[in-house]
Picture (tube, helix red, strand yellow):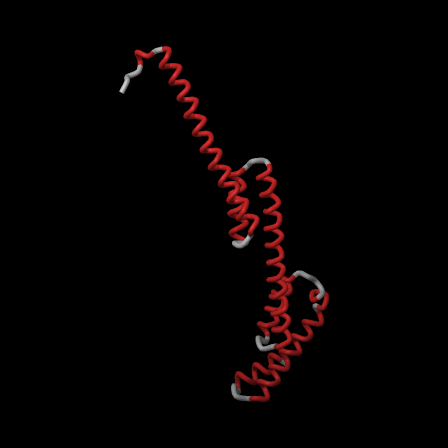
Length: 169
């Protein structure tokens, strides 16, 4: 019927009856394909469903039922992606806390950056980023002070042992 309607339309492009017949044949083909693939409709394989609906829409892009179904699948697919992202963020927060507990502050900062990239308003990541940054700065400052004190002590001992090697200013 589709082929016959296309032939009629190619001969007479303004033939309304042929256009109606073509549209009806396309819709019947879509209904048949939907019926044949009912088992696919019951799955949660949204990517495959969207591919199936796209194929049906290539037959008739104005088919309201398929457009509605495709829209619903796109929404479910978006919801699935959001849920997967939330799970990833939650797992990353748990991992970040473990890293903080083991004093791996550089890795904590990296984990915080990843979490904040996915969820810019994540309060926990913001707090741990500040804590880790402050701890790193404090450790650097403490290490610097300790090194300076040790150097001062060594120089003082060297000065008392060999004062002639030093120049007084």
